[in-house]
Length: 246
Image (cartoon, rainbow, N blue to C red; front, side, top):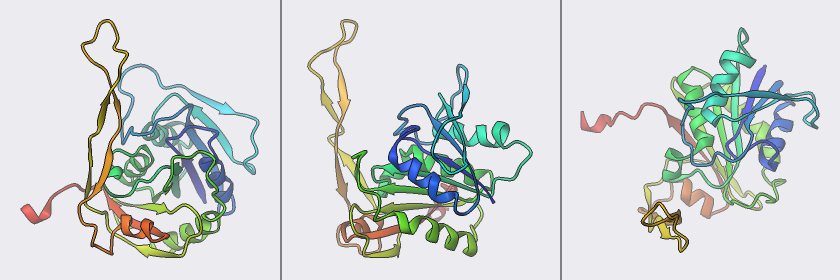
């Protein structure tokens, strides 16, 4: 089985290295990752300038092939299909492990899930993995035993057309696994002023914000699962049609 591993935190972070090593237990792994952080890129692609690709010769990923690029996570999927794996089948794409939750509305911003959505559009089974903290040194050993087992289970069950899986894990001991839906929520107070304003600007801002759960009473959502130390598996589709409005 040919497996492609990507992420949006950049090559060398703990999440992608663990995910790549675990996936070598299931097949031949090719890693294609950005050369630095690309969080919040969604399914952004590079439409101006060049996308370069460089092979990493020295690494500790159990026989995987490793490449880095100046592109986005979505670009990584395209590089896998059109360049690195051209002429070969891609049986699975896994993205992550993202340092930070991609539950609820975060999925629309996520570079981790952006890569999965591009893969799903190409008919490639795809799974995005995230953990509910931005700490790069988070203890991932609680999540490690689930990576191969859940991946194998989803492959055996099969992937519906245009569908990928968004998996979010709590920090610390995982007390269960739940199938969930995307929680309805939003971000508030998203920008804060910066004191030092460039000379050619009138004001300057940095991203901030507070997540608001719009349905805190619901017990079938990804946010509820994370708050109760459950690993949340959310089927996610590239079809954005609001069928209820037709």
